Length: 259
Ligand code: SAH
Image 1 (cartoon, rainbow, N blue to C red):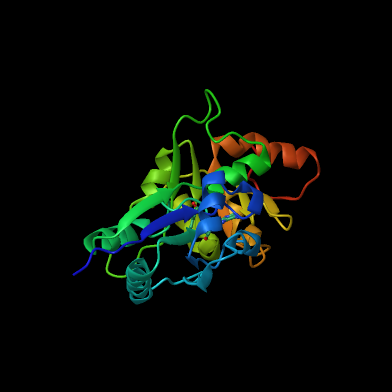
Image 2: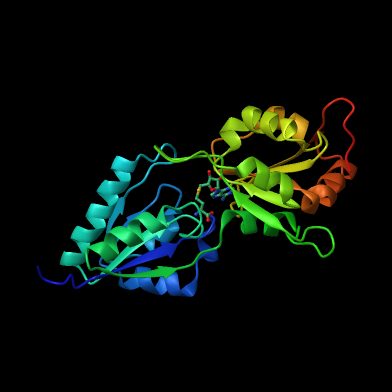
């Protein structure tokens, strides 16, 4: 078997805004022969790959392992035919992005792989909110979690992790807000824990909803169709309090006070 000539670059496309792409990513796109891109990647970023064949892959939800195996195979096949293959993923490829499956499959097939980091959604959301995730003396440990587990995987202990962290960003979870808030309340997080929902961080259509844990389901019902993060904990206490003082809607449950 001949050694594949191409290199596959797993490239972070950032949170949405095209100008949050790294220079390295932009340069790779300009010289790419073929680009496989995820649904969340902004069309202006895909368009930077002027001379490449562009292929949409990946679904917003329910990424099945069969679909992932098919993507792995397409990347391996592309490496036999092209020199520069770019696999564009939303945010950072190494966070909740199925990068490891692709890296492992490519390496097993003898394909050279490189990874280009991108700005992850949680940090773009903190930038939009002008809220540091790690405020000195307030938020010293943060958690990046998802309740979502893939087919055949062990249950995750994300609830305990969120309870122990000062602050957390919960990915791929806004659609399950009722179950999520019930689980966190049951695990002992206070009903008034500050929560900010950030939809489409970094994009003009971004939407923010300031709330508290017990009112999370009602707050999440106001979200649109864009990707959304649930941010909660000590780092966001001031953000939620400031929103309340500016008369921005803060959804609270009866009896729960903003901290
Ligand atoms: N690798 C990506 C995450 C992929 S998982 C990263 O590093 O950001 C997809 C989840 O990311 C979505 O369900 C949502 O929770 C979050 N997400 C992605 N883009 C977002 C954005 N612009 N605003 C808010 N959340 C976003």
